[in-house]
Image (tube, rainbow, N blue to C red; front, side, top):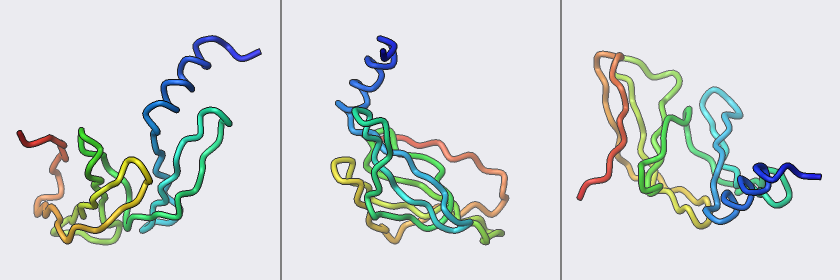
Length: 109
């Protein structure tokens, strides 16, 4: 028997279609969709370069960190489609010359 709280959690995940990003190499992260109903991760065949750092609050962007890049540290920005798990490199990146910055995501209004 499935615990009622786990069942509620799985139902909520299924409603919002969440994703899990898993680092598969030092410079590569795979995007997987959480299939809560079947309790498994589904490969979307979508990848981002570097290590996953954060989603934007509206799930429209993904921020990563280039593993072997320092001074400046580079944080590439990807456009993210939360319906499919698809990503597109925007060509944009955040540069951090100090190496001690903190990435704080926000939605511009």
